[in-house]
Amino acid sequence: MMRIVGKALIGLLITGVIVFLFDSWCGYCRKKSDVATGTEGVSQSLLEQHVRELSSIGSVFSKVPRSSGIRDSPGETNEISKANQNLKPHGLAITNPQARERKLLYLERTLRDIGIQPNRLTFHTGKIGSGINLYGEIKGKKFPDKIIDVTAHYDTFADSPGADDNSSGVAGVLEIAKVLNSGSGPSKTVRFVFFDLEELGLIGSRAYIKTIQEGKMAPPELCLNLEMIGYFTDAPNSQKSPARIPVLFEPPTVGNTIVTVGNFDSYRYGRKLDGVFTTYVQDLPIFSVSRWGGLIGNASRSDHYSYWEADIPALMLTDSANFRNPNYHKKSDILETIDFRRMRLVVQGAAAFVLEWAR
Ligand SMILES: [Zn+2]
Image: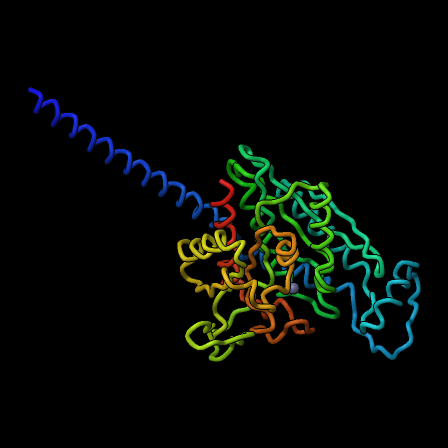
């Protein structure tokens, strides 16, 4: 009798374990398919529309010969002519001050259409007047204090339309915002931040981090920064690299990858980002610098670096800028050079990462 009861108990136990494992597996598959479905919402035509609109506005700044006289253009405000005095030694001048406002209005309208309230954060640079960061957020339903910043700079290098640098990143953040705000919404808070004045030395993101350090904004757990995500090519030797160390560090030689960048502090998230791309975006190879980026000076050249300076984990997705894109910081950085099919894959991977983190 005891033996029969014992066997029955063991049988029950085994059945219980099998049911538990099956249920967990189903739960995992369900979550995985939810994320995959979410990323299907990323629209190639909307990405293209955002890049078209933003790159047609262009830069606030132009390059001027350092030796030229400073021309006061009619209607120039005091602030602008003062800024131009300070910019001239750097070979720059504010020639299109309306560009900032036009871009902000476009971003604000798009965020409102998505259902997210935009907020401007004005900061003062001292020498070249004020700049304006913009953000909007989706409050987490369960854990509102857990925050991810999804970021891109919206300013553009002097005289450059900036289709890749960085209308592509901005378009990506807008589409991630749309995907995250559809359906039942995230459990954790997702904040979308558009930085000004990155091109003059991360001025906007440093001002933003300062507001966090002063306790005026809640600190995020991490940041995902999109910096130039639209240029791809399959041509041989199209990918340059700041460093090549045989066996230890051998980057690809063809510019068909998306590069994931992180430092030691952010590596636990970087590993997840790499994993998400492998799982959800199999058509797009990644080149991972998600652990060693902090050791490579060139991997620090965007707004995620301002988070690193404040010891906040941050990651960057990039096509590697001037190491691949011959139009970098030139007049030729135009819409027609963007590979929107592959850019959509990048945004799908980024959206999957945010969906997984925030659900
Ligand atoms: Zn940039």
